[in-house]
Amino acid sequence: TKSTLCEALDSLGFQRATKIQAASIPSVLSEDRRAVVISSETGSGKTLAYLVPAFELILRAPPRLEGDRHPNVLILVPSLELGVQVTLVAQQIAQAIFSLERRQIRVSNARRNWPSEVPDILVCSPRAAAQGLAPCQSEDEMARKQALKRIKDVEMVVFDEAD
Image (tube, rainbow, N blue to C red; front, side, top):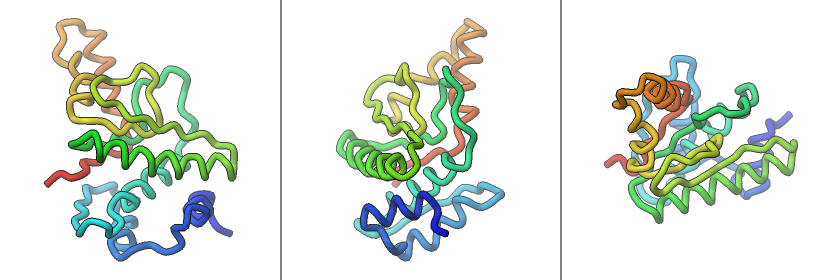
């Protein structure tokens, strides 16, 4: 039987993995959770090469607790345009999953600040991520601990366009 994620991808017209996806997705999902660098030309499927494992990790995880202040997946992007593009693709996948099994996966794009309602997948600029982590340097021990927890419990971090 097909997984919910595979059915969702099929419904969006993604029936086959590209070469870069087939080469990278198993490594990203491996048990040792090593760092994976994905490099390929524009249009080769790099965005799905990290979004597919991101959704798989979220679907495998227990439901998030009310008040969780960290995303499961943090995707750092260098530009507003790329952030919007990645967010739209992720929202399409989330909607397709919801239509199949009524499981809501929240996707959000933060341009400047760490959002007050933290989603499952947070697409943001390095500036917004730094804003969320700024209290790490605070004199207030409670603020420091809360900020560190925001990043400590993230399952997957993606640096898109890291070059």
